[in-house]
Image (cartoon, rainbow, N blue to C red):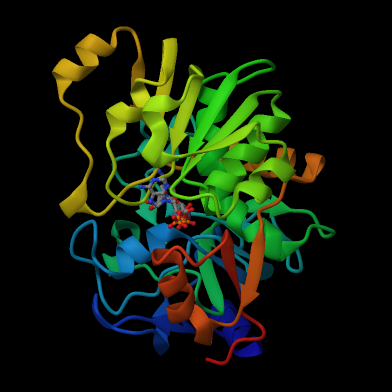
Length: 361
Ligand code: NDP
Ligand code: ZN
């Protein structure tokens, strides 16, 4: 780390070690690269834990469009600040910090001013993105040993927080917390969560804490006991949706594969909402015909992408205050391919988190 700190202090580009894929069919291999020099409002973090989100798989395999390779994925990042730029006010060396899907935005548009940085036209994603604020260089994510990021895009994490559990909150947490707040979920509301993986389990935990009655939709009953233990009323399998009698105020889809959205819209009560966060591969992207929406009558469908920085800090504070954490399994970076395999063949439970310190680069 001393080498990185010296580079930061001298204003040089910062070298980093990570795991990358060379193309959409490749396996992960160790990869050395550089990050932009520490700007006056930037922090340099030593990454300690990085979650594996299903979006990483979609990106690494170019399932949403051609990716930028070599690609170092990872946007659920928790670590320690090891250097700060001269005008940084939120962090000092030694603090813990968390970074999610964004590392910068224009800071001037209406969306940014409202702390909806995720809706800025120039959002810089943590990886697989050309950074227009740094000469168009590609960004590299959290499957690596350090990160340089604007302090505005890092959340503060208290010293006593469990960092391995904090990392997945930076994407899985905020992506589910934000729509639950947007839809004003409160005591007595009926909430359905479709897809019970890394995001799904967080949606369940937050909705329960907000007082909702919560139901899960899954492809099979493998995780029924996990759901019931959390306080879920029932787990329905997706082959029997037409038999479900409940009518929901909100259903959140975290499904990453092909499915029929109207099967869920039909389960909404009057004025109910179907929120889409799961984003399947482009070639099997689910479609909704507008005539079916007309006849669905006053049921709303909306999409949601992560959350703004202010709300991300709020989500983290809420999670820590209420002890709401992801279900995690810790791995080393050498096991990323195996984790991807399990996440795409129904063998994973919830979230894999890479212990960066224990990984060899
Ligand atoms: P996971 O792989 O951890 O979980 C997905 C879950 O969905 C698994 O439990 C899987 O079950 C289940 N599933 C798969 N297909 C179906 C189906 N047809 N019907 C019901 N359940 C199904 O993924 P994540 O939770 O990390 O991510 C989920 C999706 O959300 C991804 O598409 C990801 O890209 C997207 N995402 C979107 C964000 C946003 O801002 N909008 C942010 C983060 C992620 P099984 O065990 O059967 O495979
Ligand atoms: Zn994610």
